[in-house]
Each structure stands twice: as structure tokens, then as C-alpha cells.
Amino acid sequence: MARILAISSWVAAGHVGLSAAGPVFSLLGHESIQLPTTLLSNHPGFGHVGGRATPPDQLRGMIEALAANRWLSEVDTVLTGYMPSAEHVGVALAALAHAPGARLVCDPILGDAPKGLYVAQAAALAVASALVPRADVLTPNLFELGWLSDSEIPDLAAAVGAARRLAPDAQVLLTSPPYPAGQTGVFEISAAGTHAYRVPVRSGAPHGTGDVFAALTAAGVAPGSALGHLTSLVEASVGQEHLAIISEAPRWRAAPPVQAAA
Image 1 (cartoon, rainbow, N blue to C red):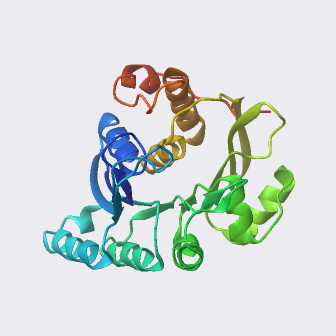
Image 2 (image 1 turned 180 degrees about the vertical axis):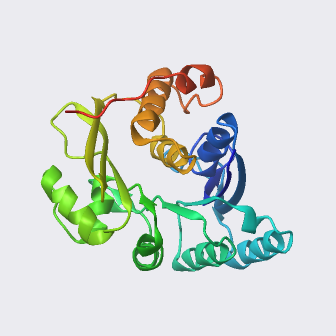
């Protein structure tokens, strides 16, 4: 059992951000401490949404209390996700200072194609300058890797070059890689080499799949196994409003790993 500190968005309804990561950690037998960078009714992709970003000073007060209770010093892994402002990135750094030796899994939630950035430019630059260089593991999508590395990524060779320039010492788990049409999955790039994990594209999945993958990674699940769990969860959730993390837990937890392509 690990203790994981997760810093990301939170929603009252649905499974995105911490509301996806928290159940995943619990179902895998891990303890988590969760700091919400936003408090929202639901994912903004629905017709109505209420709430706002959590004031950074409030989060800093929570961190100081957690540290005074000696809970942050026991953290094994820190997962950072959605950061609505540069000040929230500073909050994440303050939390990291109280968790020496913890592994940092950075999910740089900045944007996606074709819309581009969906966080403020200052927030994206703060993630790039303060969190990415410290990360042991990065889980960007294709747009995010291109933006962070200031690169065009038309193929896997370009992805390897971009990842190694951006984070030469980190494990980069690229989601939505430039695979052939009809395929998606994860492309792993590390000092040990590269591994391509491929699954068929499935349309109609609810929001939160990237958050689940990052949570599985933070929980220590290997890329192929994490993708196997996620694929099973997606298949069980297609057509639903929200990911069926709880109701389909026996199914996705038992899913076999996706093997790396030869």
C-alpha cells in the first residue's frame, strides 16, 4: 500500500480529476491525500457548470496543517494534474517541499488538439518551468508534448526526440500517440528505450480517461497494465455520462495487460 498526494481538479458529479483518481487509488488499495485546485459541480463539457478555482491561500493553509500533522512526510508519490493558475503551481511546489524523496508524476493538463491550450498561458508556462523538470514520470497527450517541447510531432521518431529533449531523465508516457488511423494507446519513452502499447480507438467514452491513466500510473501500475485496465473501463462506460469506475471495478481491475507491440 502506498500513500499518494494528488493535486488536481475536483467535481461533485462524475469522474474527472481527483474524482477519478481518488476512487482508483482506493480500489487498488492505496491511501490518498487530495488537494483540490478547483471545486466544480461537474466537467465543463456538460451544459451547466458551477464552482470556481480553490483560492491558493486556502490550499497553502491545508498544506501547512497536513505537514504539521506529519502526513506529507509519509507520502510515496505526488500526482499533479490540473493547475488553473501559476499560483496553483506554486502551491504544488509548496506541497512537494514537505514530501522529500517522493516520486513526482506530472500529468501536464494544458490542452488538446484541435482547440489548443485550455488553461491560461501563465499557468501552462509555470507547469513547464516548475513541474516538468522535476517530474520522474510525465503523462502528456500529443498536443501537450508538442507544446512543452515546442515541436511538431508527426510520427513516433519525432515523439522520441521531443520527449528526450524535454525530460531526458524522466519516463514519458505519451497518450494519444501518432499511431496509424484507428489505433490509440500509450507510447513509453525512457532511458531504457521505447515501447508502443496499442489498442483500437473507441468513440463515446465519458470524460476522465486521461485522469484515470495518470492515477493508475501514480499508483505504480506499469504502462501496459494501466492501459489494459483503462481499456476495459472505457468499454464498460461507452455511452454513459460518467466513467463506471465503481460499478465496473471487478471488471477493469481483472483486465489483462496490453502487450507492447513488437
